[in-house]
Length: 205
Image (cartoon, rainbow, N blue to C red; front, side):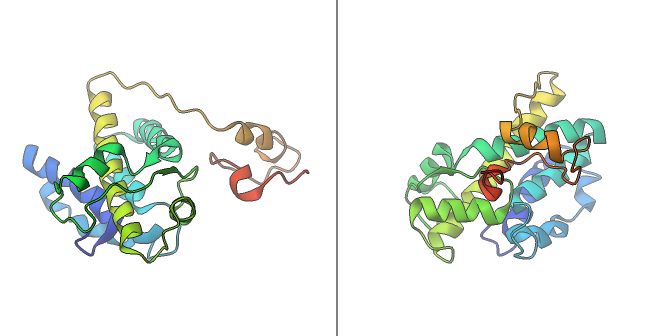
């Protein structure tokens, strides 16, 4: 993350580096730099979290589309409900165990509720009172990058050991709102798995 290439590169490269060591080709011939664009939700646009972007790209390299969809769905769902940064990544920082330690302290944690960089970062900044341009916010995203890469490895290891079982279920609002606004509703204009009310509120109040 602190290489200057960002979160999407960071998550992808962490996983690719292991495959280059353990397997070699074709992973040696795929440059991690192809994921640099994903930083900040896509060149800073605040879309899909870059760490998820890089991790999902890696999943697609090692799984069929059908299995990748299931694993990525689980990864994305986990991300929306997890308290970032993890206790373990905070412990690493306090111990000075990262290769590049910019902030050697535990950072506040929060649940984003969304896979969007914009929402994830904003909710954390609001919860901690730390400004978006602060080094601590950047450090938070660096730790999130590591947490996402680690979770991806955990899910893939379980998959290839025949032990992966999805546990994520979509928020109730997705089901409720989808009754009218999903593919078979009276206003069938929305396809989504993310929490509706977090951003849109209850539009019927």
